[in-house]
Image 1 (cartoon, rainbow, N blue to C red):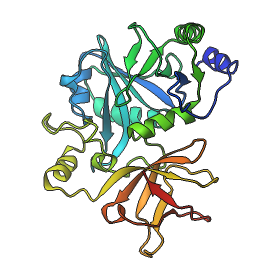
Image 2 (cartoon, rainbow, N blue to C red):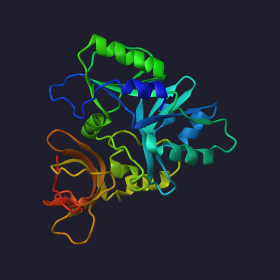
Image 3 (cartoon, rainbow, N blue to C red):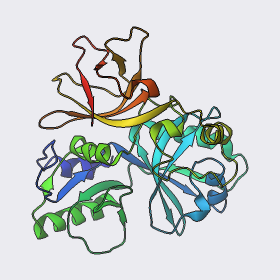
Image 4 (cartoon, rainbow, N blue to C red):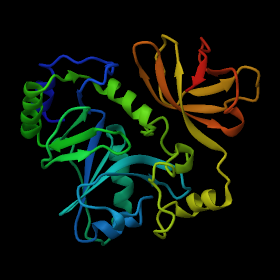
Length: 305
């Protein structure tokens, strides 16, 4: 992140929880980063690498998508924004370098530039605020009345200050915003969960993040086979847990009466006021289990929402 942006954030006070009264919130999304994909071959290149239909994208209308390995396992989910001069991929910051390097292997002689914009572009999330249409402001996929503001540190600081002066807005941190992502069912991956799930296990088909008509892309054969043959044996669910112990993505879930081992995995976790909110991927047979628990020392019980 840019030093000016870091210094600005240090002057503000943030809460870790989403207000319960639908109050407007603003959050610096420091857990996300921007990878720009430009060049005359950028569209055709991404069409052959991602699950979403790049040809169907509309300028400045973000969509969810995923990048898979050759075995159809999701390397990273992302929000993609089509612009006049290329595309922006919004993805977890700890996976950006991995994704960039893997994509770079397929560029070959194509006119495609993959540039890490982490130092040049800042990302802010806004929820339940009154906003006027303007450049650099984009609707947040799957989350009603929510937006992304993506711009230079200088412009992002000015936008944030103006919004805070004009409206009563609660400043929240990334932990709180992840609570909104969990409510919307957006499955951000990290280093502990990358390349572990086919997209359907993350409900990306239900989020309109997979095109089954676009043609070939990396991992497409496995993704299509899972779809048309109905061989997906796992799905993602919202859940909660009352433990005081921090829960990390990648932690395994078991069923108290089942000694066969893991029945699921934590995808996202965020501590809110009364409980920890989760996104979990479970085997089909575990969906109706009565005693789901973390495979940690305290074996905290997990309840599906």
